[in-house]
Image (cartoon, rainbow, N blue to C red):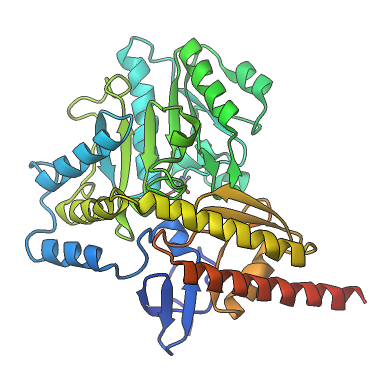
Length: 397
Ligand SMILES: *Cc1c(COP(=O)(O)O)cnc(C)c1O
């Protein structure tokens, strides 16, 4: 039977009935090791007892009231996020793209409030991904997402990744901000070197620009720090986060300094659903776990273990996997075989991984992954690479 859903996704032919920790179970009872975590969303794995408890308790009290009223759970989550980061204020949304829309609008309004409404352009980087709304596809700059949807939203200038001269040349009298992912996720786990992030901060300060970091994929503990930019010792003026922040409940946030947010006065932006009591209860529960003593150390330890064991897999299959990228539990395997073939072969080994740009597959396990889960994933990756390697040798003979 044909599907009633708009065919915008190339879905794998499996459906899951339930999950526990890092494992997903199909209707037939087949168990898959989930090293994709719903694209870095299920930060605490599936059916985490603390999240289930927070969601069900809140569900029996109150789901939604709208932002016409005070939402104490949101005040609390905002305060905790602000206390844990560079930021002074938080705006809650329902997705990464919406968090980025808030960031983009805020950067433009900052300059308008300062008497420079002509400064609205934002410089972004090749390979970027910022979402699928009209503004965020223009920001991401990928032709395949822009084509056919009418005139590209104006105000985004893209420069090659890592080309300092091109970046300096792109800064003009209309430039408002730079926007960057500390590690490009969809782009293929391409890490922005620490020196480059520091250079971007210096350029912003020199030219009066705002630095926007898109930590939708890298945030909420994924790299072993609460946010990836902390590794570079550089802070943004505005930051978006989403994916892991709700542990599977749709939630995004735009965090900013008071200065960067100076233009966002009452009535300047809004959302019906954003920050509703149900989302806030779950967001607070995710933070309870991620901010607990030792949690980020666990992420780092599992990341190191995974990376180290993967080194041995590469040594055994150099014709299949050529490089490991990333930090903590956002890792990428650069491949010599098509990443779609690798993803399908891994699925045959009952392991879920996620393709990305630059012919990479991403490993994004839940942050609660255990040593045994890591060992199991490495075995399955080894089997996947072995299977593809022998297919390739077969084809070459
Ligand atoms: C996934 C992602 C987005 C878009 O988030 P949605 O929730 O799909 O709107 C934006 N930026 C980055 C870096 C992402 O990884």
